[in-house]
Figure (tube, rainbow, N blue to C red):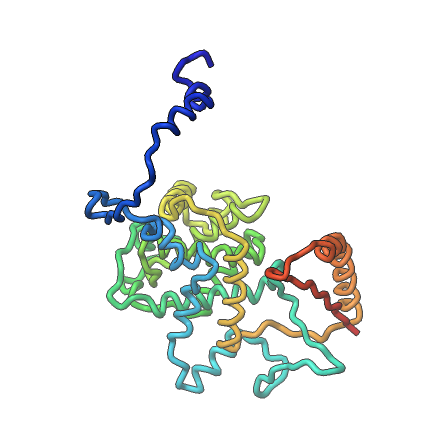
Length: 348
């Protein structure tokens, strides 16, 4: 504070008067361009954050980017053969009555709902949808092919002691085979349905970050690494690596540890899954299931379930009652006029 060059002295009224006395009348000067000034700096409007640009095209990070599995399932040509289409139905739909599958529609007297929600998806059908998404990833992979990392090569790191056929990387796995592999891991480790969606997020993030394709030679180890990581991030009581060795009898703990370590490094240790991204993957899985006749089981709305929905509606109504009062009392201008409308839901 005692320094003569401090800001207090330089901003004193005395100094301000002397400075004003030396000011000359303002003369506008011609505007100088960047070339005249020799300044090559970009304007702020011309700058782009290069680190954020890839996020727009990475579906596992950006909520507005389209998921890879949905686009690959849509590029797949509609099944021209009726026999193949009926076979796909038989793999994924439980026929309770003989004859063609008829879709159920709600009416004035009966409302059909499935038990799958974004917060609590149906475990069985979510695993089926994830297996179908992996199938489309393998089937519609790049024709030229990309590099195959050794850590995911099943020939270098086999999951079983049985001899691997020499042409194991030439034949695409069937949807049923993928579903059985994923279902076995989820059933033995008692994983949740939400973990299946996070597994698909990590799988697509790996393919994008590492710039690799999932193929018949590496799909099992990639799926295993994604499930391993998703179970540790999502579940409070995660499954240890040694537990997976009890499920897959011929794999070692050291191999599981190395698989997890390299998987994390390829993900650049980005294991965050925003809620918006999770919801996008859930609804895209439902869209893919609808396009492939893999519908979630529908049940008529019972009186007990309607009462539960009504109780939840009342609870939410009480929680947001104070917010409604604040919104109604808030004053707004004519330029930014907002009207809050509340419509009660009636379930009879």
